[in-house]
Image (cartoon, rainbow, N blue to C red; front, side, top):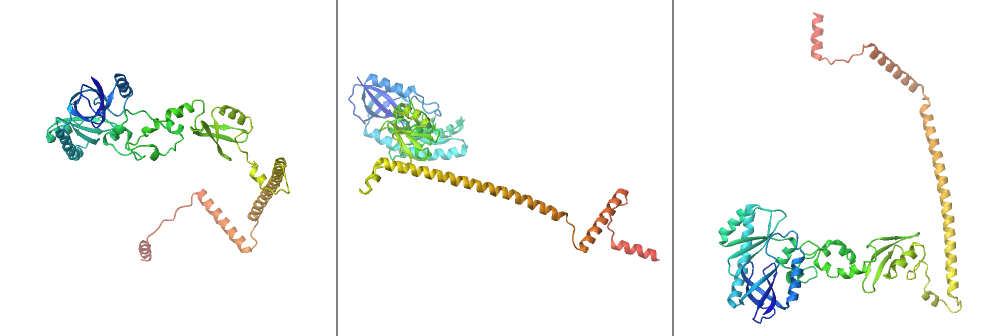
Length: 419
């Protein structure tokens, strides 16, 4: 008795097969599973220990949390016979029918107005069962829909709810790298993936490059994560700042080839520090000292010294002293210029305040001055008199609003008086 591993069904179930027959790799076989009689593909022979390890890997970790119900992903299957030409022809005919059934079932779904998405359809080899795979966010009552499907297709209908990642596994397709999706032909189970894995691998946080056709983070983010996790054990999180008295350094990432850390300086750029020397680098920088691999701003390279003429013959120390003296003079000049500029600004502020005060006083004086012409004085006196009269009328109560009178009524009253 030899043990073979095989896959069957569109969701790629894995099964263990015990037979005395010699089966080849990638050979199609008819088996009986928990669902019924169907075709399966032989992966190859295996040992009992490896089969148990595979069972633990597949059944130990949970699959997509949206998936509900259905058969277990790992099963014990029985060998019936090797696939004949008739079996292969019937399966091809069933695949053609499945495309037509999927179109008709989606039209029926629109009539029922259910919040679900039909992904794919699958016939068993004997045609006794028809499986519908769908995705939905909530629990759905599809009993009436199943009755209509059974009446039209005249078989037993089985509905299977799957998750978003399982949808890509069933439908299959090409991933952003150009290869077929890993879940569609070799991946055994889905592992939980988070954004921390992406950050630790120095990858860009671009959704179009990180996510797969299912809309979730790609499964390949977990392949190299263990190597990166070992490097990040004794290091701070990516993006942390190391503050110094002058500036602050940023831990940008990790380089696996050189086993070192990438550190970014806002003025000088990025440089590498070995992981073993990171603590020494941190203490050295926090104290205000410069690191060995770090290039200072005014570093003089050997190329500049070699380019000079032999007549001058200046040593490195002379050039360095010259550069240092130029620094000091530039700093003193900059300080002098800064002091002069500060004095000018302060003088401008003082003169501006005086000018504002003078302008306010001049405005008040012009407002208080009486008009020079006699006409303007008369007009102002008349206005004041009229205002006083109106105030007196209001206090005495004699003030009344003038009522509008019709001119026809006035004329009639005047005629009566004349008579």
